[in-house]
Length: 529
Image: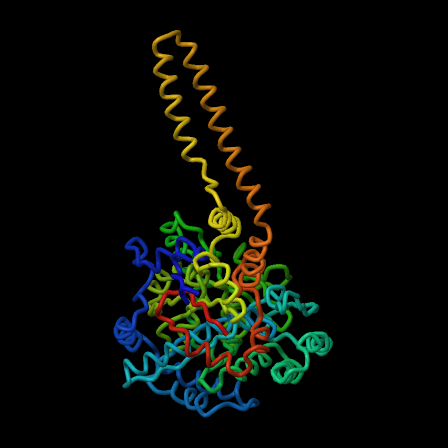
């Protein structure tokens, strides 16, 4: 293939907002702090050091040790947890839902981006320590988004009733799921490894948070990844003042709404509510609403007076859960974090939040778009070469690609532009003639011009269609290859589970990705395995 990357901006898969952010357009610069370059981290470190409450490191380290006590961890992860207690240690954080068996491939790319940038930062700023953190979205409650994954064109779904935060959800019932999935994996050495990892993660842990921690640790422990479940009363102690302010003043709604007004030309990712908090129990996660001087838990009969809800907050902060607007603030309060790494949609909603962070005097992190990847087998790469396709071609929308290839393979020009130019000259003469005679003749000329131009346009379309039929075999090979690499006309990384490629590459898969991906380069990577 001619190239192994394509820029995010030209890939066709990034929104205008993300393209303008990556291009550092001046109209967006008020919405972020320091743009993610290696040089800019120096300023970010200084800002975070001056504004972070180092007392929050103590419960952070305590909580992490408690959460890791029942799984075996690497020396590098153990060391990173200890380092978080030191004032010269900072985190780089990514977050992700608790998708079954990691969900789509970009789960890996997020974490690898996070690991790789900590390595670059340590080389550039050796007097500081940098820890990669995976923030598990244990307090989310949309089970339908995470209860499946795609493997070899099939959807494997975990059918289960769910309510409340997904991290607390029991893994009961996954033994039957595993039996079906394991048959599809086959009996190779790599298949046996995948079966063992799935079994140990989901059949030997009682809830989805513990299972996901085990899985992520199995894949990335050797790289010092620290996995955090922030659904924790100890951690939420530091968040109490901000929850209280949200309940009483609704400051986030006012600040974020003002920012949204500045983003009118873009599609807004999330809209704030008056109170951006949930009330949670094991089987309940519902919005908190303020009506008629009472705090109500939506879709329940639970209600509190102001005094009652503030008393509950002090005694049980774990019953309050931040939504998508408040969660980033919670993260930046409990972590000595410099940078958040996420996909385009995530970065888009973070760009709505800077004014809110300023209003509560918390340092806004750098925002880095995660690595994006298309994985290609050697057979697919060779097929593309034989078809004369570049990666720019394959990123093109299917209809445009087929049209372009039809023009390319056709033995004669399909474009009737020369004939249209001849027609234009003929009608120029007729219009000159019309000026010398009755005006009604001009109308007749105009009608005939429209008719004949439309006729040529139709002939051109029919010619293209005829050539597509004639070149059907070649075009089908192009379509098949593009569908393999972009399943369902979408990005592979948002569709396919890592296990499909682990069968091919085994334990070499993650080291290969670690080696190839460069988080500060804004390129869509194409990696042949």
